[in-house]
Amino acid sequence: MLTGIFGHTDGFYTDQLTITEDNDGRFTGGYFDGIVDLTHILSRVLGKQLSQTATYRVNYLEIGLRNVDDTVDNSQAIMVGGNVNYYAPTKHRIDSIQTVRDWYRLKGQTDASSTDPFALMTTDKNYRGLRFQWNETGVQISDPTDDDSGSIMAGSDLSLLSMFNMYNSALQGTPSAEGYDSSGEGQALWEKRCSIVPNGLQFACSHTNRIESEGFASLVPPEDDFFMHDPKADTWKWTAPAGHSIDVLGGLIKVALTHGNVDSPGIIEDDYQMIVTVGVTGWDEF
Image (cartoon, rainbow, N blue to C red):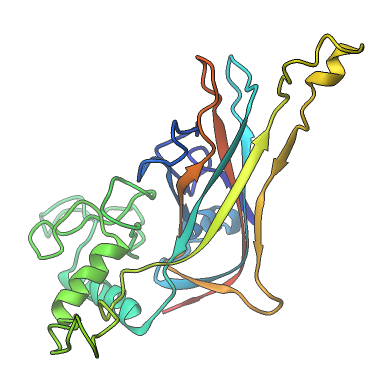
């Protein structure tokens, strides 16, 4: 079992460290996109280097919220929901990653400290495995592999989406490229052979603080009894059926917020952190 706080624990990445309610209850796309990097987390826990060229088996997921420790305590409640996404391994998805890995090997990309072939060998040890993130937006994991500036893979950081798209381009893996109709009767319902549509689950969780209930304070003493409004934390939990799991390609799980309760009245915003727990039963490298 692995657990961490988005934006605060290594391997649980997001650039939005805290969460507040949205004015209309629908979050802007990208407001809070969290990436769980199972390879980074497991490497720290197990004390050895875990590879992203592998499929990780997950049988448990839990998402919850907690108050932020700041100068103003939270006094209201929040509910948020969204999507948990991952890519399941398919032949084309695995082939796309292996193609890029083989290309980097043939290219001879190294971390040598000098271009002089007779320079002293460095004593630094560098792992050669690929490090890729979810897509090309920002930096989502620790130390991703750079895309090559002089190739069709040029970009910022290596990602699943960039590898899938380049593989589709080389494969000409679209219905029209293969001569299939893309509209009308008999149309192809698939979009790309190396699908960029992620697998996923939907979730919702909430956190309720001590909330004042107006209109009751002056009725019957003791008055404080009427100010305690059912404080609680409702976490979202998913457990795979016995003996089953979901297969997570590259060990990357994305948690994105889409909706929640509307903003509470007041000048000072309540803010919360998101906690995630993942159960991993094993992995298979390719």
